Length: 311
Image (cartoon, rainbow, N blue to C red; front, side, top):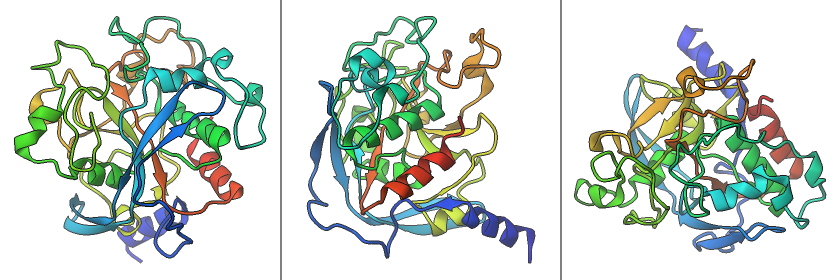
């Protein structure tokens, strides 16, 4: 067996089921956007339906066409209004579809400085400066609050959703970049939406996916299973971050743009070891969530989070 074949086999053996073809799919309301209220809080998340389709992408060996199932994605980047009830226990009231103890859920440590760098943390601003693991913990918390499986998108899911209806002609009207942002992020929803109705996919703040960053293109495992994640991601850094941000050049704010998380994002963190919750030097990074179409047992959801959350 070749090294490449062995690598693909190992990656497949590590993959976690997150809603692929051949599973039990609920047809009710699949094509409807909706608003997810977060029980016990004043927050809600607008979710937009992304229909199934095909995507042509760069791979390690050339190009490949990928078929993706439909899923829901949050219309905007997760905002401070949606993130604060997770971060601050006192803002997380009782209420939810799952039997769990709010006090037992791990939460981010209090920020020891202004991680927004003065750009603001009002409810409609995108939440920033968290680690990818903190974003995953938010998804886990949201599952226990709602009983619905929410997670970070895979790289392929993110890119597919971003490209929906996006052309060179309208990309400028969708984007906050360094030429028009006044060197700061902006409240979500102030630029035009793409063809699927998503806003701020380009610029404003970059967005985590669940995957490891691969500079040479998608690997065969990702192409074969676009809704799965090869886990664990190696090391603390190197998480894939997509879309560009307010401090990037316009050409770096695209649906193909990707960078890896890195240790410089924690340069000002005085803690030893460095925080598992915060990247104080990445006020340009946030995230949005997806909901895969399908029915998932509690054991399946717990297995997913147990594998992708490392601490």
